[in-house]
Length: 255
Figure 1 (cartoon, rainbow, N blue to C red):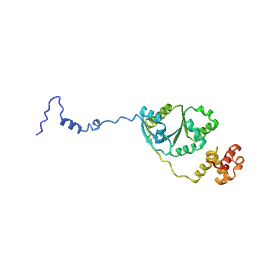
Figure 2: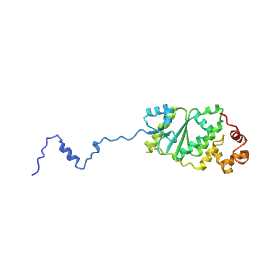
Figure 3: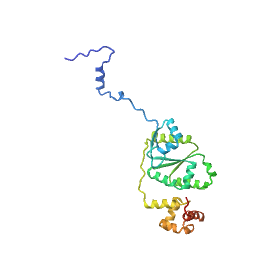
Figure 4: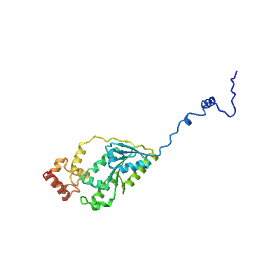
């Protein structure tokens, strides 16, 4: 005998809902809270950068970006698995040029990120008022970095830096669907790199001239012994640069 299925008109019972849900025409998906598409980017910031640039950190948060602070081996901001950014103020940029370790920083960043950027923040024409470095040295360094496929961005203030970082991160993550990822720096320091770094640390030498010197003299010690010949045997080295190197090598150390 068929069971009684009498129902009150216009009333849907619990049994009715159960039968509908089991009919195959519905699923549990409508009853689960739908996740909204991600509309805000995540920016990974180096812990030291977060401390020294609190206004940028605050501005990115106010713009809506999700912030993760991590002790990064290289780079200040990571916006995708391809893009990492090193930020320098104009003063910092010039200072690192005088110490000759900027190129080493950025070359290591390039080893682990296919799209490395250096962001220079501040009033760039101020370089014409510096006394310790010539403007053509700054332009030359920027040109050399560009030739090495290290992309350069210039902002005039921290507010422009915030706008750039937020926009770039949003484009990479929301449009290109690339998530930020921390890539560890390879620690395979070769003997050749150590030799280049040693010679490049001398005044006004740098990476490219260091390579030329080592190709000419084979070993660092042989190069140092023959500094008197650099001006005539190594392309790009004149008496002025050679004189500064000799001054460093032959002047007695004083506290």
